[in-house]
Length: 321
Image (cartoon, rainbow, N blue to C red; front, side, top):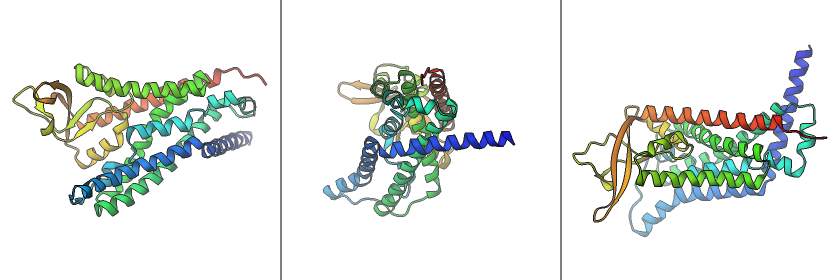
């Protein structure tokens, strides 16, 4: 009987913290601002190509795969922004406002508090991405005609959330360790843009861009298909569609793999040459299945490691009543 009472008490405390955190997220003006920005980005993704076609008197062709290949329409930067504004001050803000004292001195374990905050952030992101997915599905149908494989929208939704959880875990870890919202934001922004810059630099000046497949973000530059060339350099214009191999592209790559499981991905290096312009040098090819599996495993490791550090930092923090 006592065990059931303890479980009921834990569940009550967990749900109380979840409700508290969700209401806090809803009241955040910056979260509402990012939600508005996300819909603006999704609208640009939907309407800008159509508008440009009309300006150039080019008919917009039907694209039955538009919805499943576009996903939420916010891309890597959108994933990072949602993660940042949702959990940037989830823990650090409690320390700055002093509300951490009554929160951690209540009869609720710190593990319960942390898991409840993480779950509330997940629910917030889920709600935002469901709205974006519905918006993109409706817009895609109106602008690009009937859509195929709409059952895969759930795959893009789950993949997008999984990608966002990577950034969310990094930001939560920074907030739990630093206990400063401004420092948390700066660290998160620095990591995101630092990795983005590193991707461009490594792909242009190094043969070691493969290392980016083990970092959060877009990963190493690659192209869909198995490139075979009689020369060392293949023209950028003649290559198949570009893909990203990192944790931010799990949704897109999952959909591509489900539809075309036999596809390969060729990693490339960018070279700038006088007279010929921008060129891509094929490096090596891998099965798309390996690229997808590796991105999921790398994402799961980052999510676990950074959440463990964040939880441990919160658990060991000394709070005086």
